[in-house]
Length: 75
Image (cartoon, rainbow, N blue to C red; front, side, top):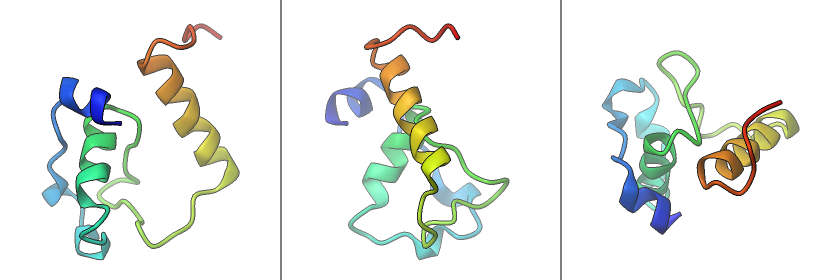
């Protein structure tokens, strides 16, 4: 994550209505993940207190593999 976040801009979490629910320990990692396009919100929310579903986890991993160049994005 550090290598990718150094290549991308950290996201501005102020656009998310539930940003205050993000733990201080996770804030920088979430900013980096959103800035690297690994993650995106649900409208104006991130839902940080909700567990990821299997489908959301699969999408996250797929995006990470494409963005880091480990797989081709073509389907």
